[in-house]
Image 1 (tube, rainbow, N blue to C red):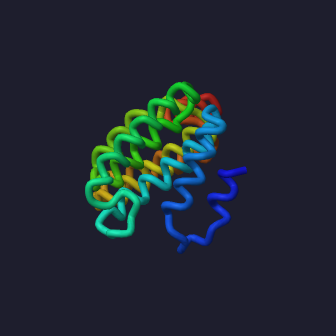
Image 2 (image 1 turned 60 degrees about the horizontal axis):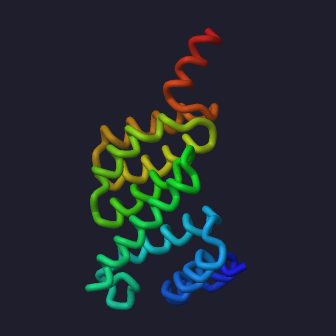
Length: 166
């Protein structure tokens, strides 16, 4: 319920209010992965806007926000050991820290371990990271891999299926 309430606020309301609702939701139901995912997305957005004095992660609070995301990543691994949530959360943090090249490389290596919609979701984040690097080559490669995910399998699996149907 608190997770839903957090996102009922208009987007121009203070991010800190959404974060407090999500923190309370995690305290009450610590095993709900989706709440942690939303919390990390809000925190990484706040980290990315840390130059804004009104950001909950501005100034000296930034390091605490980064540590919180890292803790959430560890919890996500525990809750979703076979899913991409933790990998995506770590990539979001790297992008918020202005390290899209590191995020893209990590996703390039990690996304192929997933299949179906998990692979496609991971690849979508990889495309965003590649775009943020401003490298045409990385963006082209990430986009090709995402397009190959159209059948719902990882890139390696998609090639195997393609050969089987030729």
